[in-house]
Image (cartoon, rainbow, N blue to C red; front, side, top):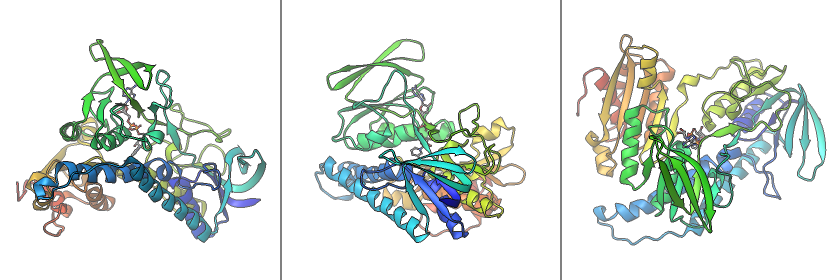
Length: 464
Ligand code: NAI
C-alpha cells in the first residue's frame, strides 16, 4: 500500500502525529507491535506501562497513605488495609479504557493501524513483520520514526523476576517487604513512593549528590526532606556494583562515596537509571554520538522524507514533548510552519507533594551568567494549602534582573503540575513576573502562591 505518511510507533508522539496529519488531509498508516495476543495495544509506554498506570497506583497509594496517616486529624476514624490485586485490577481497567480510546481515535480519523514490527528499509519504504512472521512492504512519501525508548539494564543487575524495571514494578503481586531502588530520578521516586506508602521499606541509591539532577538544589533538598518524612531512605553518591540471589532475596553490594563497601538485602530491586532510545527498526538512519537519531532543528533526519520525534531524539524523554513534536512534524509535512519551544517543556515528578519545573533553573541561569531575581513563596503561608493540610514546599520564580521576563520556575507543593501550566502560559507569551503578579487569581487557591512568588521577585510579597 502507498500512503502520504507512515509512522512507526503508536506512543503519544506517533499517534498524535497520526491524528494531526489526518486532520490535515493526509492518508496515514501507523505501525505498532505491542499486542496482548488478541489485539494491538496503542498508546506506547506512556499508556501501557508508564505515565498512566503509575499515576493510577500513585492515586491509590496516596489515598491509602492519607487514610492511614492523616484521616485521624480530620476526625475520621478508619483502619485501612490494602488489597493489591484489586489495586492492580483498577489500574489495568484505567489503562485498558484509554488504550481502547486511542483505537477509537484512529478509526475516527481514518488512520490505518498496521499490526507488527515496523522497519525502515530505505526512504519511502517500510516493512511490517506481523507476530506470525508474515511480512508486508508499504510505501509512503514521508516516514516518521517514533519508536520511543526502553529501560536501561545494568550489566551487573540483569533483569529477572526480582530485579526489575518500571515495566514490572507497576505490577508487583504484593507489597515488597524491602524494595531497593537504584536511581533517584523520576521513576525511582514515583514508584518508590507507591510501594513505600503501601508499607514497603524503600531505600533509594543515587549516584549523584542530589535527587533529580535537573532540579535546583533547594528544590531537590525540599523533596528529599518530605520523602524522608514519609519513610523513604536515601543513599547518595553511592553505587550498586553487584547482586547475588539468595532464595527470594537479592543481596546487593556497592560502594560509598569514600570507597567503603556497602551492602543491602531486598526482596525486590527496581533499576531506574534512565531509558535508551528503541532503535529496532530505525534501519539506516544516522545517529548522534549519544545514540539518538540525528535530526535538524525541524525533526528531519539525514534521510530524505524521514523524520524522528520523541524519546528517539535529543531532549527529555517526556510524553508531552513527544506529542508537541508529533503535531509539529505533521504540520511541517503538510507545508505549514511549526515549531516546538524546547525551553518550555514542563517537567513533573508526581510524588506527594508534586514537583514541577519549567524553563531555566537558577543554577542554569548562573552557568549562563544571566543576572536574575528570584522570588519564593512557601505553601505554609497559603490559606488553601493550610486548609488542605498540604503545607510542604514552595513556589520559586526566576526572572531576568533587567527585563523582568520569567526565565524559569519551580513548584514543589500541592497541585504543582497544574500550577506550572499557569506559569507556562505566561512564559509562552514572554511574560514577566509583573504580568503574573498583576493577574487576579481566586481566593483561596494554591494559585495565590504563584502570584505571591512573582510579587516576591519584585520585592512586594504580601503574605510572607
Ligand atoms: P532519570 O534519568 O530520571 O533518573 C535516573 C537517575 O539514576 C539519575 O538521578 C542518575 O543519576 C541515577 N543513576 C544512573 N546510574 C546509576 C547507578 N548506576 N547507580 C545509582 N544511580 C544511578 O531516569 P528514570 O527515572 O529511569 O526515568 C527515565 C525517563 O522516563 C526519564 O527521562 C523521565 O523523565 C521519564 N519519566 C517521566 C515521568 C514524568 O514525567 N513524571 C515519569 C516516569 C518517567
